[in-house]
Length: 341
Image 1 (tube, helix red, strand yellow):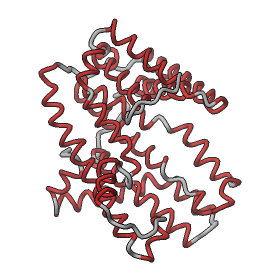
Image 2 (tube, helix red, strand yellow):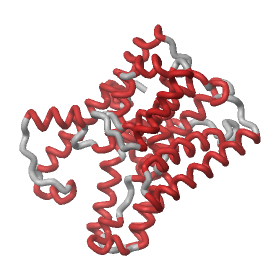
Image 3 (cartoon, rainbow, N blue to C red):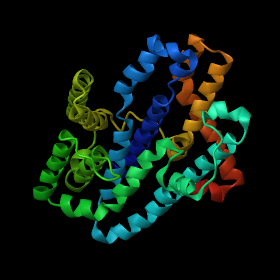
Image 4 (cartoon, one colour):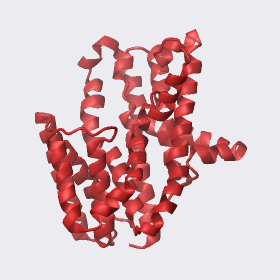
């Protein structure tokens, strides 16, 4: 496919994955129904059915990131890619963690807000401060960013081992075996390493296949991959066999990429290009809206259902309005928060 269509498809996939992340954090049955939440149909839908359907979002992000980093990669491009990731990953990671910590700390000093943030008054220490900034203690959604930073730092190892098929394929098999055995690595999630490495391998050895223009055979292959993925998903929820859910993520992410034609996608709207900002900000307004709704209308199932289904649209609108204000009045801060995107 043409470069412009490839970029458009990437933007669409990033945006859709961002919507799914919002949905993943929009569960509110526990807030509206309290101790009786587990018995309510909404709870089962939000925390059992929906996660099974949409949990491919973060693995898809990981695979897109890995593919783009190693697309047309050479050793000469490494330093430039690292420098760009300082702006797009490291600086916004540290800044957002700082802002989340400052927000929680400030709110915890106000007695009226403590029930909303569900935290007692926080005591400032430098140890907790640096822990929050470095290890996303108060910014739970940035575990993904933390993993991505580690994966980018490991880029030389990835390329060294993946640039040849005779070393790359055994390496991917070794990662699968590690997941099967339940191996834990220091700091880095083994499944994240696998998703990133598979995509990197695809960028190095399978670019023509990944970026080929859509046809019916490609669409059929996508359907088969998705069907295989959701079969693995069903098996996981029956047995809790971890490799099955990891395989589901890989197959479903690849399947949707093959299934969706670049010609079906409309033009990219401005609000679709702020996915990083939406991802970074969405958690607070999502929880706040649900908590306020539950406080004002406790036990109201209709409101809970409406909030859950409408939350992605509401959050995208709110975040894009915030983005417009920042662009206009604080462009330098906006550039830092959005990773110079």
